[in-house]
Amino acid sequence: MAPIDDKTAVKSANEVARTVLQKEAAAVAQMADELPADFEAAVDCILGIAGRVVISGVGKSGHIGRKIAATLASTGTPSYFVHGAEASHGDLGMVTRHDVCVLISNSGETAELRDITLYTRRFNIPMIAISSNPDSTLMKAADFKLALPKIPEVCSIGKAPTTSTTLTLALGDALAVAVMEARGFSADEFHTFHPGGKLGTQLSRVSDLMHGAQELPVVASDLPMSEVLLTMTSKGFGVALVLDADGLLTGAVTDGDLRRNMDVLMGKTAGEIASPNPVSVPSDMLAAQALALLNERKITTLPVTDGAGKPVGILHIHDLLRAGVA
Image (cartoon, rainbow, N blue to C red; front, side, top):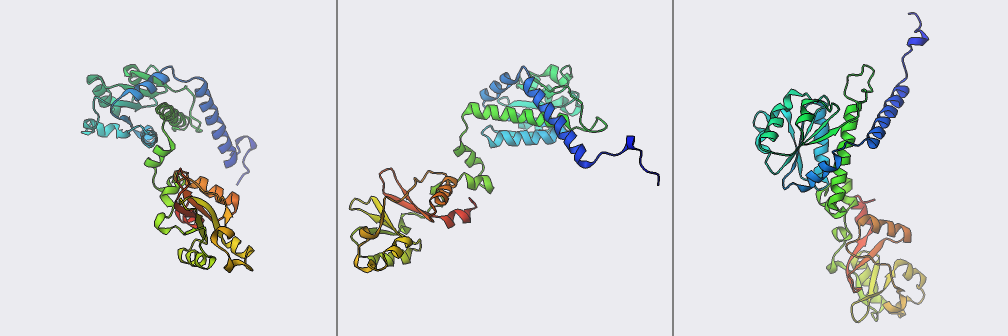
């Protein structure tokens, strides 16, 4: 086989990857500098509707549309995806006059979007169009026009949806985040929509994982250490929480306190052995923050107290590890 001429040598995979990423990154940066004129108006429209955001598209635009709908829904804006072709066969019934439709077509001439476009016009349903062709049928029909920069596809033949889908996805993210921030969407609300997986565990609160009041290893400050040891052993946390006469947390007896006072231990009371002012946390603290505190202080348990300083629970590092917070 004859050697490959240097002029026609195939680029390495790494060279191709760098070129693709650099060109797509430049395209997104250009769009950031040239935001569609209707962007803010489209955000205001979504904020003002009583219904849902209906995303529609076909082909690669459909795949991107599904992701945009999922992002909106997970960040506090009810949204779902309707396939353009399926809309013509009954799924238009899913779209109400209280909704807004976001129709995606790079060319703006996707035939499968004709019926849902006409439906929005017939029933005065607000319509946002995303396309790279501002003079297309879709864009002319839209109430809000989100035009993508006219940048060539990054693939070697200039045909496969690459740059255009990246721009559409990025614009969809920008739309979702702008709406999310305008709504004041909080971490607590995000947790409500993401109860499972790593995101769910990272957003769990101490109250979700702690042991309740009935499991607390609490002792009075004047309790003899012989009885304190029984409490520590039976509860299994390696600590006893020392309370004053009002039930407020004043100290904690730990395994370290036992070792440091071994020679006089049995002649003392809980208050005499306990380390004063133990670190405690509120029940609404994020579990990830509690883990950071445990690691910082090099301890294994945290008393959970209410606003008055009374223990309401206890959190062990193993509880966090089992929940997957670490």
